[in-house]
Amino acid sequence: MTFQTDLHGGGASLAPDPSPLDNAVWSALAGPHAHLAERVGRAARYPDDVYAYAALADPADPAGWADLRTLVGPGTTVKIKPVEEAPPDWEVVGGGIGVQFVDTALRAEPAPEAVRLGPDDVPEMLDLVARTQPGPFRTRTVEMGTYLGIRYRGRLIAMAGERLRLPGWTEISAVCTDPEHQGRGLATRLVRAVAAGIRERGDTPFLHAAPGNANAIRLYESIGFTERLRGRTLLLRSPGTNTNAGLL
Image (cartoon, rainbow, N blue to C red; front, side):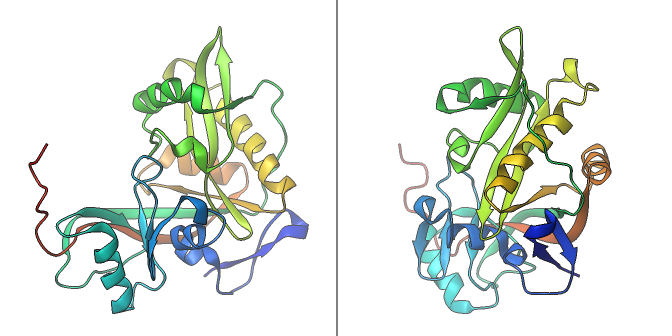
């Protein structure tokens, strides 16, 4: 089952309909994040220091896989989702399942204590991510959207922000809290605050979680997110030999 956007209601409503969420990375790279995209034909990817994912306009189209091979080069590992299987000449070296949630009843509101984070805050953001492991976050991920943080005695202790942005939707990501400050509702306040900004421009929030992250799933469902789908991520190696391997 999929969900159809209901911007007037501030969330998503149950209604089967084709959605950009079905292929969210492609929808972002071919849409609002086109300025960040590296693209060849029907394949695109984010720069590795922004978000280490690629996407195809149609994973069932062999031409798209040929474009992706041209884009990444031979013997190169690449993450792509959602893809159930790859052509036989692509080597599967890893993968997993992600759970996608959409806002159906979230109360979005500003957090007065939250501050906007930017490039100057990236070292602190990376340190917090390293200690909490909320998911992929790179040196330029902050360029994907608005990131908010909460500080205690000048130290960054919690953050959340925007990652994928596609027509009508924006993903909330990098939701994390320093272990010494968990249990205070900081993550919830930041998710609500990021969602408020998303709603202001007419988008609906969505997010992803690993199926084994019971604490995150419980939090998201308790504040108004509903599971929409589960999709596979594959880590693949492109056909051919990387002639630059081992060179300095």
